[in-house]
Length: 205
Image 1: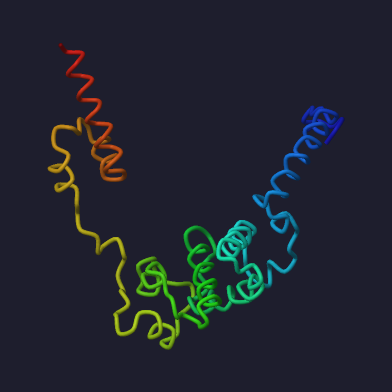
Image 2: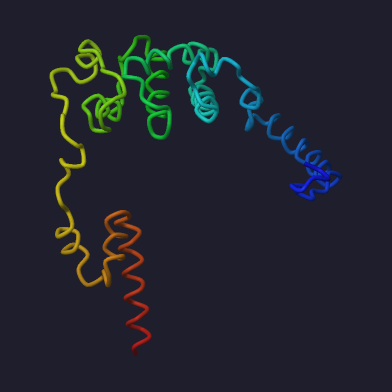
């Protein structure tokens, strides 16, 4: 883009100096094990494994924490199988983490679906909506047993908690925004409201 109308006017010499500096920083963290060089490598097989780059690095960190890096390839092979079992969910947060965790459990536990996270059970029950493709009866039986799959909008099953929350927080909530903050972050919001009320009381005296 240099010398064009879209020239970003970057100083290449300074950029080069910055790059050289961070090479030494990278080397330091590489040597102490904080940074695994594998996550920096281009992985052409990502399309085969159906794994986004961020998910790939997270899986590697998981396997390292479990002292099971030698089984990393098995986990990569397992991911598309789990994704197929679950009706091809899109690998975006939180579904990518859920599929990845199930693939790890399937490999390290010595058998497929020996360990099943609650999130996967809820997904198969329909709590995350309808999957892109049908989940086989065999997989449903394996994961949720005889539990029924919900056929309504998951949010419709939630109880209205507005009045309960309003009563709980009482005078500490001075606006609708306060009430929403309390609904989302109850402990943090309540603590903040209490300090705010104390400060107002001190100032009024």
